[in-house]
Length: 163
Image 1 (spheres, helix red, strand yellow):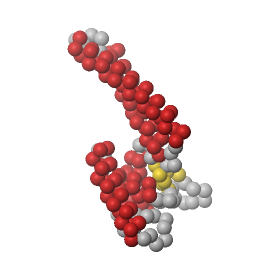
Image 2 (tube, one colour):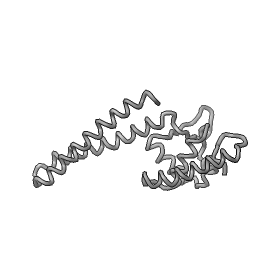
Image 3 (cartoon, rainbow, N blue to C red):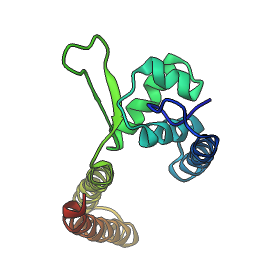
Image 4 (tube, one colour):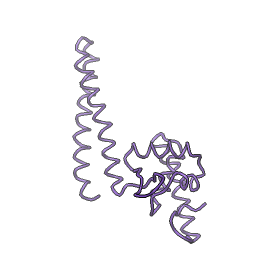
């Protein structure tokens, strides 16, 4: 299976390198993100593709079903690294690795941490009748997520010009 989409006749070494990257992505992204291996493989295929890809093409490249490809691309879109669009005059939507994928990834992480910060602050407000130990734990949660939101926001602003 060629994982160098959009090339006419990739060299054996390019195919081999693409296969190795896809296998590594499948394993490492699956383990670190808690994702299915196919999500990592789909991410690698899109990252390495010079062109947007239809679901059918992604199926061919990954060996996955249409349902699996649809689920994996939704996961990658949610995590900010892939976009889905319909090119002018095309019948089918395509997916591509976002040119600013790492900005999208940081934006997604920031949104998640902001939601957890908001939860921490609500819990702290609602937990005023709890015991001191429980209130202290809720305060610490709020402090932690305030810190994380500030740092991730600063990282995003610092990184954005590099994207």
